[in-house]
Image (tube, helix red, strand yellow):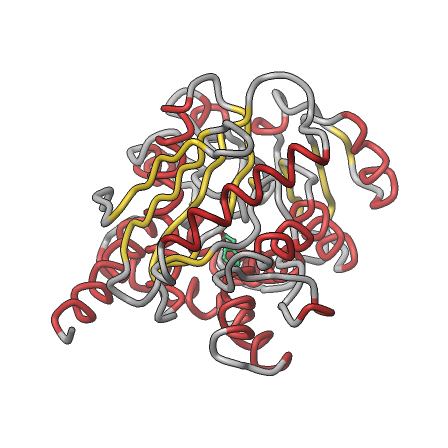
Length: 346
Ligand code: PPY
């Protein structure tokens, strides 16, 4: 799956930073995928991230049944403190130039380190950008919808593992309290879930207190005795090594690229731990943005499409069980089928 149509590696003329746009596939339609501003030791690490994240976007759209392709943008930030605001604008304008040069083959959106205001700035240069603030005609912050979509995936898993979609009394460990993780933790707490939470930023302890959640350390939370572990932070949280220490029935959450390597899905399966592929559970944000901005769905219709993740996951788990596959294999097969069908009819 990791074979890309086009990858642009560009040094921004204003910022001097490396901008990488990876277009994995436009077989289903023009590519979309967020803009990640992140620190990497080497620009090649940023490239590796862009390649993996863009391939996951292709699968995300394919399984969601949306006619969009997979792409992603990564800006390699230098090590050190945060970008000052002037430098940030330079970076965003550099990114906007690259996107504009692609002529509509790829549109960006928010990802780790970016939000609606950044999208507004990019839209001064190119129309190929999702999730501008609502007052500028965009669909706004996608994170509440990503959280809703992950809750839908959790409900499908609840039905399968516990016989009920309700999160009331369910024990969950949420890893990461960024925009999506905190929104999801709030939804879960409101429904009566017992939460253990963590974040690399200890300043997020206040969120835990507010939700009546138990605070854990990022190192310990994977071993928490809970029903479901919910990855909601940066990728590669599940490794060959740490899967052995999990004490949960399932791992389901909105983080992208949760597995350090694809074979971790098999290790989880062998341990009897249900893993819903990240690109299925994290699709709520793009489903909402693309439905609203490209397909002109109203708020109710967009919400219905996000909540349909529950049925998508339910069907995937069902298919996997019938075929004796892991959910990852069933999801990959579904994505591959849809891409093949689209390529054949093109
Ligand atoms: C993702 O879902 O991983 C994204 O890249 C976010 C996103 C949201 C809206 C449009 C494009 C990308």
